[in-house]
Length: 291
Image 1 (cartoon, rainbow, N blue to C red):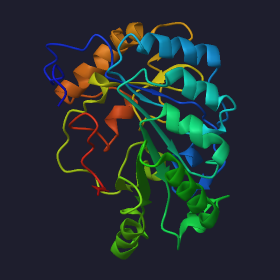
Image 2 (image 1 turned 180 degrees about the vertical axis):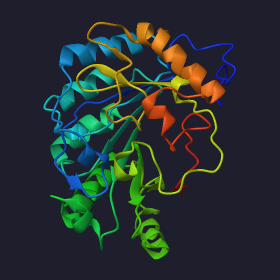
Image 3 (image 1 turned 180 degrees about the horizontal axis):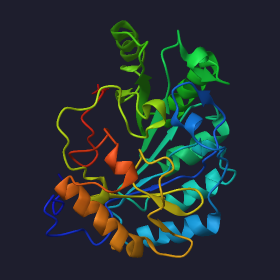
Image 4 (image 1 turned 90 degrees about the vertical axis):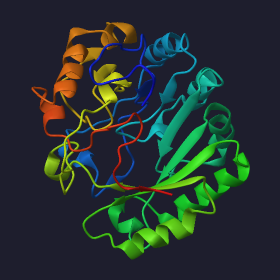
């Protein structure tokens, strides 16, 4: 656990160690297991003036982990190259996840220059085209292979898949075998947000523990409103960066209340109350599998 983050809350970092910014809430895929199916249509792109203001505030804390994705496909943003140039070299880590369909050679240099970590969201080739409507596995694989050849290890990479009810162990083993020698890490996520309950897993974890995310991260949606974490898809906003700074939200009464609820495990927050995808340690959910 990051130094200073403990569940009895004697000390809160002056600034969130991790800031997640949704570049785009739009997506060009319709995945069968994606929580987007339970939401109204999404299609926002973050305003560049807002993004710049957020980055400049974060840049005062260069050890910040900056994550540039959430509910949509980040590579849809029309000013991606400017975004990469703005964040280049300013933070300890700069992460992004993509479905790979728009990972064209024209974007390789900007992404290689701007990012420290890039995750490819995939499925096994046998099921990919059926679970990811609008997708073609052969095209996506070609895009990823092209990026890997171009970057030559300058960006740490991950291939990830989601394990759903129909996924077999053989499917997982095959996926791992396909990618383990091509990328730095292979990750298998457990499907979450079952039946529209955001963060819910098929099998609830046996012992609820305090989640470190309110002590660790601020999530900014493309419209500037602030969510709880990566498992908050449309909960009541905790703040609005069109009107507030990150510091103001981070030290606000509403986020302080959320931390107290996690510390005591007595929840009134409607999102945290029903979530099974809590993080007992910052950055480690302790579900699924990482190779």
